[in-house]
Length: 253
Image 1 (cartoon, rainbow, N blue to C red):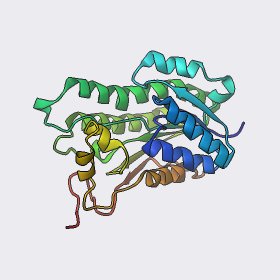
Image 2: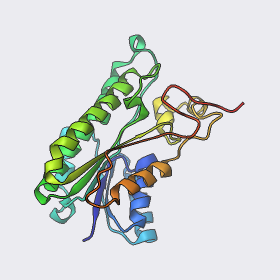
Image 3: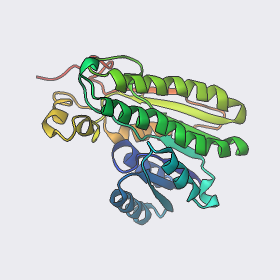
Image 4: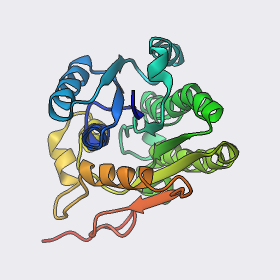
């Protein structure tokens, strides 16, 4: 049935943009997320625009049993996944660690790290058996450099960075490629989620700069994926022109 990509967190931002990009290149897509209405809407648009096939899986990636059930509900033909994009992730809060909310900590750890592991554990054995596949882990500049108020979010993304390097070693003998893509500021729902719906605070994050947009990350994913099989892009670190690293941004005005 052609190439199949499995995208977590496909309901918005980088995941949604990646779905559009891959669909335009003929990939059939497994779209996952918690918001069924958005998944159905996206699947309809992709089918109408690009004529590709989609399979929707609505579940919470933090729940191991839900991940197992979702994978079990996939027909066998859909389990032949060529590309896994581990995109689902979030930040919650931005206070100092001594004022942190443990519920926020658990949400970030369970989504950004454990959810990635749950899905990788389900998808990767098939890639190993077929001696073919590519896993893209969406990291962050926060996985390279700490910044004030980043604490647990940074910790989860540092973990993704380390995990990706180990995955690269584990899967290399089986011809399965692993790529980490670490973006700086991307204007999506990310900051709105981080500040729990406070639109004014979210807007302040991007004031005075032209941040990356989700389509920029989708382009990077596409470029890495479509290299010759002999080529593995191990790591892509990208920021907007105004942001040289996680701590510094040059703002206008």
